[in-house]
Structures are given as structure tokens and as C-alpha cells.
Image 1 (tube, one colour):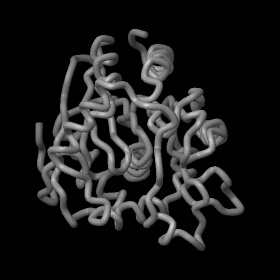
Image 2 (spheres, one colour):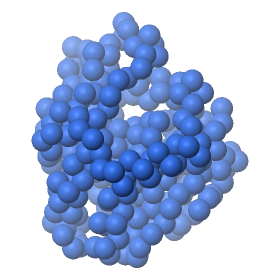
Image 3 (cartoon, helix red, strand yellow):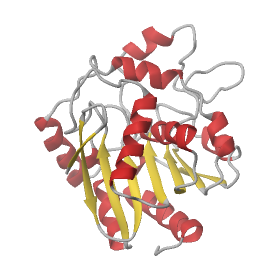
Length: 265
């Protein structure tokens, strides 16, 4: 399915199942197909799952427009409005989680039932106030560091079915890292700790125990900032927790939704 934003950019999404709505957002450079195992799990438990390729990713339009996190937040807001979603659950991995924080910074959490952050520290830059940022990123090396290849994002292989789905999507439209660099730099500059502190809805932060990007300790520290925050570290998982340890991830997600939101495990 496609929808067109108010700045005339075509975005692609899937919409499956019936029940309480969940919107899923993928990390930078990723494809929505990485959530294959979560979609079937959630649909079977009577959730409506909307899975979005953000601008410049997956099958959505490649463009120079809106290469900033605030525009991504507006895209999310427009999708929620177009689908007339109420009390939506927002789930995001990496930059997808940052998009959720950007959305809440602009629109609040009145229409958000719960937030799930998958391996995204609320602050990317390491400094005297925060030691849980992205690798060794600092203010001094910021631009040069983010221009480098990130290396492997995973600790273990993702399952074959998900891998094949992502590979097929990548063949249809390759990710253009150079085109999207301004967005990466904007994303990297943000500090969402004030947004976390303002969250009143149930908030789950899931970290990969072997993430090559963020120290897993960030999850507990960040969760304590939210009014209803909780943290889980999934062992033997890297940054793409949901695809590396899909069964463990789904169990954690399902328990959170059942206990904090209401629904089936």
C-alpha cells in the first residue's frame, strides 16, 4: 500500500490483521521486511500491524525532501491520521525508535498506548553527561565518524526466511546511503532524554546483549527516565534484536503487550 505525504512523497506500508493498531518503524538503511517474524506473531494475537518503509528506504520514494527526523515524525503523524488510528502502539528499531521520540516531542503521547524502543539509545553522542551513545561517537569526530561504514549490525545470523525477504526487497530498490547522509547526521545530533522523561504511557526498551552499536546498559538507564519504563536485555543478540533472536524477542514483546496494554501473549 502507498500513501502520499503533504510534501508529496510516496511512502509504502503494509497493513495486516485486526485489533489494536501497532505501527512498526525500521532502522536507517533497513527494510520493513526485517520484521517478518513479528508480523505473523502479532497478527495471530489479534493486533493490526502497520509496517512502514520511511522515505528513502525500502520501497518508499527516494528524495532530497525532508531528510530530517522531524519530517519523519510528520510522516508518522500523517499515517496515523490517514488510517484514523486511536491509541496506537509504536514499535521502532534504531532510527525507527528515534522517529517515535520525535513524534512524541511534537504531538505528545495522548494517542499513544505504548512505546517499544529496540536498541536505540536516546542520545547518540557520547559526552560527560552520557556514556551510552553510538560506539565511540563524540562531538569532536561526529561528521567523519558517521560517514564511515558502521560494520556488522548483528551478532548472529537472522533466520533464513527473513533474510530472503530482506534480500528480495533490496534487489527491488537499493538503499542510497550518500543520498540519506543528511538525515543520518540530523538523527545523530538528537538528544531524546527529555522526551523519555515526559512519557506517561508504558515504555519498553529492549537492548541486544551483544549489540555492536550501543552498550546494553543504556536500556536500564533510559527506562528509569520514563514514568512507566522497563528494560529487557536479550542475550546473544546484536542491534537487529527482533531478527537475530525472534522467538525470545516475540516472547518479551508479547508479555509486555499482554501485561501493560492488554491482549494475548
